[in-house]
Picture 1 (cartoon, rainbow, N blue to C red):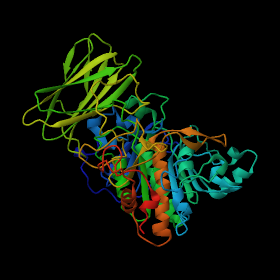
Picture 2: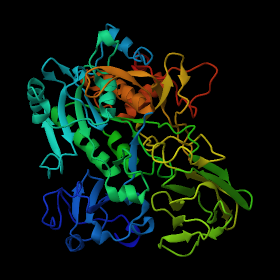
Picture 3: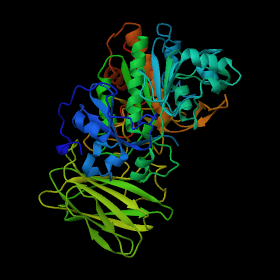
Picture 4: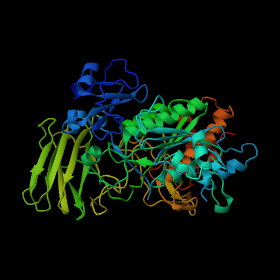
Length: 580
C-alpha cells in the first residue's frame, strides 16, 4: 500500500502533525480505535495528496522514524504482505512473572570519592504509569517526578505530546498536598508494574523496609503507555484482557523522555521492562532499531529486559540438512487462537505443509504472492491463515506467518522442506507467556535465542535476571545469543524475589522477572552517567560507552567462559565499572 515494496525514499518535508482532515473528531488518531497505525522509517511512503485522499495523519518520532495513522476503513484487510511486516506495530508485554549490594550499587554510594546517587541525571520509565503518591517518589510534599505523560487520557495533545496529557512537577506536588490527589492529577498505575520499576530504578532509601532504588538522587520522567488498539490485538490473536502495548506508542514515549531530559539539561537513563517474541530476534524490529539510533547520542542510555522465555518451550530451531524436518506443536484444549512465525535463513526457499491432529495435510503455496492463504481443515473447525514472504524487507530472510483461529487441541505437525541447494537453519517462535495458553508449546523446543525484543538491540543494555542470594540464574530467564551470533544478554542483574513499592498501598511487596533486572540496570546506568557527564569525567559519554563500561566491570566466575548465552559478560557491578 505504501508503494512498491515500501522502498525507502525521500518524502515531502514533513513536520510533526501534518495530516489530512481529522474526520471531525476530537480524539487523537493514536487513541482512536477507528485508525490503524503504521511505523515508517526514513519517512518513506506516499505523497501528500495520497495522505489527504486517505484522511491520514503523520506523527514524527525523530529524524529517522515516523508514524502514519490511517482510518481502518481505508486500510482494508490487514495483511503482512500488503503493508510489510516491520510497518505493523508489534505488541509488547511486561516481563514479569536487598539486591543493591549484589549489584555493586550501594558500594558506590558509600565510596568516599564517589558517593554516586544519580544526582543531575534523569531516569525515565516507559511502562504502566506510576503511583506518584508513594513515599519512595517524594520527599514530603516535594515530588521527584519532573514530568508524567499519561497516554491514556483522552485529549488531543499539544506542542509537547501528540495525544494524552502531561503533568509537571508543580501539578503533582499540588495533587500530593490535596485531600483527593486524583482530582488534580488523574493518572493511576492500574497494575503496579511501572511503580515497581520506577522504585527499583530510582526510589528513595527506606531503611525500615531495607529498600533503596539504584539511583535515589535521580529525577524521574514517567510515561504511562496506553494499551494496544483492539484491531491489533485481534490481528495478533492476543487475549482481549492481556496487558500489551504498541511499538509506536513506546517509541513516542522514549522520544518524549529524551526531549524532556534535554530540556532539563540532564543525561537520561531509560528503562524498558517490556518484551515481545515477534521478529527474527536479530535486532530487526523498528523499536530495536530506534533504540540503537538514540543510544549513539551522548547523554542517552537505554536498559531493556531479556524476557522470561527460557523454559517456556516457545522456540524451535533446526538445521535443514535432510530432505524434511517436522516441527511438532502441541496445542492446549483452552487455546483460543495464536500466531507463530517461521524465519528461514537465505538463500533457501522452504516448502511448508501443515498436518492437523486428525492427520489431514494441507500445503502452503510458495507462488501465490501477497494474498493471505486460508487453510481450512475438513475434520476440525480450525482455520490457519498464512502469509508467505519470500524475502522480508528488513532482514532478507524468508518469513512465513501463521495465525491459528479456533485451533483444535492435540499435536499439530508443520513439515518443512528445502526447495534446492544446501540446507540452512530456520527458527520458529510462539508468543510470550501470558499471550498464549501454557499448554501450547513446541514438543522439541530450544531454550536459546529466547531473549525478547528489544533485548536484541545492539546498543541497548540487555539485562537478564538472577537470584542474588545464591548467585543462581533465574530459571525462566531468556537466553542468547541471537540467531546471527550477537551477544545478548549483556549482563545479569538481581531480579528474583525483590522488594518493590506496591501500587496504591504505600507499602512494599515482592516481585520477580527480568523487567526488574532492567530497572536496576537502568539505575546503575544513571550512576555511571552521573560520574561520566555530570561530574565531567567523560563529558560526551554515549549509551554504548555506558554499556561497555558495565560489561567490562561485570563480575565473572573463574570456571566459566564469557560472554555466554545465560549470563552475558557476568553479574552487574557498578563499583567495578567505574574507571579508576
